[in-house]
Length: 596
Image 1 (cartoon, rainbow, N blue to C red):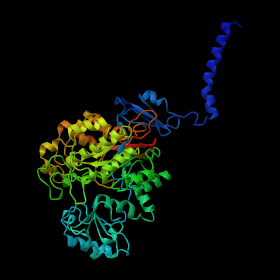
Image 2: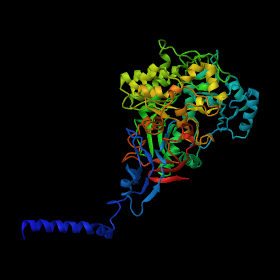
Image 3: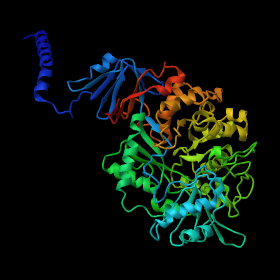
Image 4: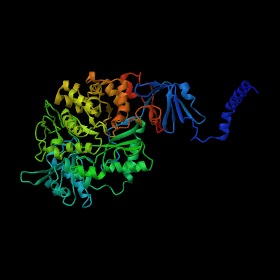
């Protein structure tokens, strides 16, 4: 046989093998570990990948919980097998699963160890409050903790004291909470706090008044008050609450969490029952007067976990208070104060609080307060390798304090490797934005007060305090992006149980249109963002906020298959109808978890 004949025979033999190979493979029933088709393919639509170029494809294939491929429908459909589910999108959009920063998960299932709020936003008088509180105390067993909430009730803020609470609760420790940094306690509760702890307010005679702030309050909240003996009801409530996020298109939720919340979510994780992925910003340094001891005892466990449950950083206590109640700490004095707050013309700088109860910021003044404050805990976090994020910072005065701490920490040890982040962001100066970008800091921002609260409880209070020109410069999203800061979108409706929290897309619409939902008034038109950037805020930049951008936030091969199918075209629907787009299907870990 000649050489040419041998070559021809070889080609014929090879072609024959190619012809019979598929049948042979089928006959051998090759295991899926060796060869597998896509599990699900969605085609004939618009896949908004949110990759570096914001590429838009027609179809997406998913296998083993990861994105297998994106591209034209004809090519992607070739990856389908006999068991592959095919979904015709008919022109609808697919977006990456929303990553939900700085929002209450509701994991506690109610007020842990306490009773419902009494007097929130109500002009309730002290005597009436004490009568209502006594009802709960009388129904409790001796020794039980009584933890009512009186959030931002101005008539109670300075009227309650230790002696009044002692009269109605001689046998029970009582802690009346006004916010995360301020409580009024009775003698029983006070006895649990070491007497040298900063934050125990005393009168002119040196006697404790019952008001405990910041670090003293933190000792009670995090170290003294007992957890429930049986966590199972809270675990089940957390599972139920987190499942509600699925219908919103949320596939990862994160935020600052206490040790109790971490324990509850860890149990769900261990059982493989988490309804969403969890990014944890641990609260262990928050209002902690013994911060360095805790950093040393715990060690650096940042990044511990997996794609479902991960510790992504730590956080410290809020710098300032709630914006619309006058607590926002500003560099410039307010035009007027509001009745709900008693925080002065500059608001409240919680980090600068001293034993004398003085609030304020003196950038060139005494540094001694910083040795006892959250400022110091920020330096410690950086020193021991932790990322600090989900840090409540509202006003530009509060941001100035944070930047001062960040710059000092960075001079000691570069923070760029960990990436710090703060939240809310209604007020930032252009110079502060540049400094944030230089440090690699991120921020989350919510549309609450300008865009979806009713004017009388939202922007009108801002206008009264700062004037309309200043309000037009609030929530400066475009300026932050232009300065080089990656901005994450925080829904800011506060809790998964909030009945108004029905559309995650409405928050994107808020920043695209800058319209108040109730009267259509536009605030800061120059700060409006594009549809592309709004989607980045809810996906890839939110992933970046938690150092998770390598695994999620965009639809690229190898990344987690977490995405939502919208009931329309996100890129062409009128801007003021984006929030009305329904979520038709949600894929989490490559599986359909919600389908309308």
